[in-house]
Structures are given as C-alpha cells and as structure tokens.
Image 1 (cartoon, helix red, strand yellow):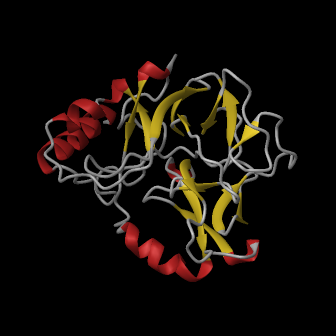
Image 2 (tube, one colour):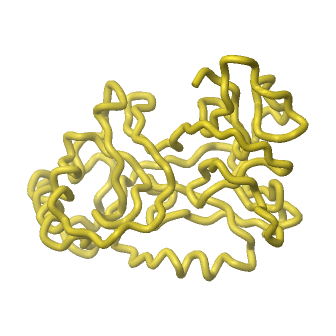
Length: 244
C-alpha cells in the first residue's frame, strides 16, 4: 500500500505541477511511518533536499533523496517563484530537516537584524525606519509560517496579534497539503517582541555569547573573522564571529 500511495502522489506532482495528494483519499491517516515520501533518514547533508507542500511553493522542510521528490518536481513548469526564505537541507540527528542558510553580513543594526517569515535572520536591519510592529511581547502571537506548521514538519513564526487573520488567509492553505507529518517544533520557543519585530525566541541563557555581532554595542569581530548570520549557536536577530 505504501508503494502505491507514493507512486500516486509522485504522478500527481509531475502532471499537475503543484497539486497535492488529498487527505480525503486513500492517505487520510498517513503519518510519519507511512511510506509516501520515502525515508527521511540520512547520514550527511547530501542525503537531503528541500521540499514544500507542493512543487511550486517555497520549500519549508527537507526530505530524503530516496523519496523521489526532486525527480517528481524536476519536469514541473512553475511560475516565477516568490521571494523564498533562504533555507538549506541539513541532516540533523540522522533525519533530514530544513535550516536557515548561514551568510556573512557587515551591517551594524541598533535593534539587530530583521527576521523573515521562516524565523531566519536576514542581512537587513530590524524595523528599517518603519513603524514598529510591536512594543510588548503580549503584542505577538505564534502561528504556522506555512501550510504545514512545525507540528507537521514545516515552520512556525510570530506575528502581531492584530494581523494574525490576514497572515493566515495569505497562506492560502487548503488543508490538503502534503506535509512530512513529523514535528520540527523547538521546545521553549515563545513569541517575543524584539527590536519592534515579532519573532519566536528560545528560552535559553539570556546572556549573549562572547562572539555575538551585529549591534553597535557589541565588539567588532576579531581580525580574520566575519559576522555570520544563522551560524550554529547564533541568536535570532544577531550573528556570530566566524572565519569567512
């Protein structure tokens, strides 16, 4: 049964360019152990690739190469993609997962770097001179950042409470999206107002690491290093000094 379902879903993706496998059909009770997308097990990053709820949507999770996602979507003719979050496929703990792509940034921002809808730090200053989106943590609420949400293998984000309805409507979700079905939620993440922006922030040690960079009050990176956003251990909204 698992093989037949996988072939049916890949045919759907190949022929329709972004159609999804309806949950009301044979796959209504699919879970992470069902053989629909192939195995997400991996040994290193090269065993994984980025994927989304359909071939033509922005990637928001990662799957194993054995699932055939890349082959199924290779011939699909999609419209020009929107600006998608900068993600990379990683092998984390033997399972494929999407992670924010590290990048160098030479900006110094009074309120830290801006954060995109996927929760990734970007090389742009938070606020950008615009009206702050929030003032207090209570102004922000948690919501899925895509049609899967972290509970089903996608991502969550934080938005101002008064924009939640419009944000959810803007995702255009149907409820029939093809999602990994494995939680990627991070324990301790809470919606916070940081530098006038709503974002999900972990509940770890509040003291900044000694190699943190990106704000004027932080020391410049030592010679031979640059400020890298989305580096391992970097706080959301700042970077860490690391070799280029």
